[in-house]
Length: 113
Length: 423
Image (cartoon, rainbow over all chains, first blue to last red; front, side, top):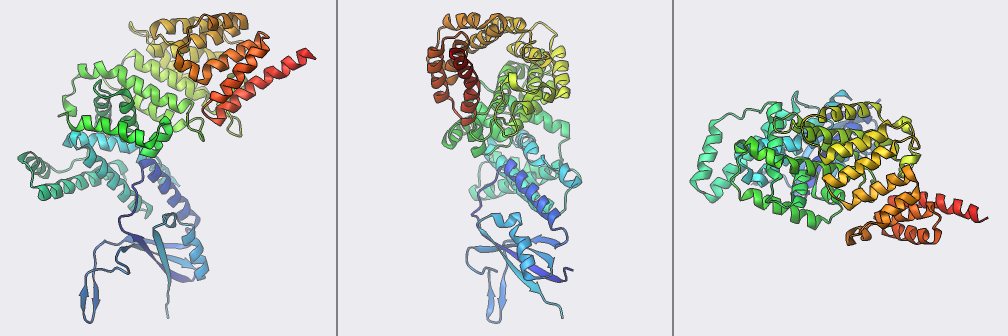
């Protein structure tokens, strides 16, 4: 049973993507579909895209970006179901999202008491 | 998955429709902004649709997203440059209107009009072809380069020539008259014929046959045939030619992807439905006063498609057709083809006689075709030494490994039999 939930956070470098052509997008779409079908049991929520602007609130004030590094933005999130972290990693490794060299995905277990 | 199938080719197929429909709305000179907006809409689609939110009418969804993107681009550039009244009026005009999504038939009409705008005598033919592939068939610069066997730098050059022209002309898609369109119809036909030809035997090293290119060409010719201007016999002849060729496409390669000669093809694999469609169009094209090169070329392919075997092909009809083709659209290649057909009909010597009477231009001498045909007929006439020399040259000149293999495949047969004769 896939009894654990993992939060996956997508990060990418901003503005570094070359524009794909319609036939390339068609291919990407097909890859997504295959991947989603293959791991239908694992993908709990395809999540959403996050906006590019945001703020970080700290005790000493508000800074203007959610950036870990200056040029890295959090593009979106999704949640997975898996029994182990390794299983979750396998699912993400096969995803088309990771095919882009500028994308990294952080996987964290959502711990429930 | 059903949902997936529904949008399988949406990206490539809708690209041209969207670009043309938006250009019709905002003017052809905004070509760059329009292409960017359509690209943006498709990226959005990729993102949303992958999450499962596939709209009922993907085409309308894409149009609306692209349209809004275009509007906000115009607003930004307007604010930034504070430009002239033309742009202010334009922005106000479009704000006033709700973005209605055009009807599917209307989008087809826009694409068609755009095709006629691009096929203009003032734009060089190579640029027309690149523009059509890139902006109306949705190919990237790299894909266009691979498919036309030119460098990406060359694609950019040719594309920008077409784009510069379009940007500087106050072209209104709705102002194209039927007589403008009728004048340009032959050009539109020939550009789509070129798209198809490239697909039929690609100069691409990895892909010998590009069925997608052929299908793209057919899609656009069908669209033309449905319009008032394009509803003429040449269009149907072109469609006949394309469907008849398409019927043999799967049988032209063996399991490993190597090309097969006509004689080696398994005729039972030829697609009967496409043959029937091709013949249907051919019948429809046999109306009116015109006999175009497409009519004659289609009738030649039809002879092959209807022949029960290579041996039982009506070579006399094919020889006559190539003779007719030479008169309608003179080309030395038709003479070369006539020689090949003649060799089948009246023997290799008759074919060789035609070759020896030909005046060979330099460009033909540079290509492998001439040496290949010469070698073939010389082998069959027993002129082995000459044949070997030409065979070697043909293989050296062939542009891809697939074509080299095809030639070896053909010539090895002869050298074996000649060796046996010597023994």
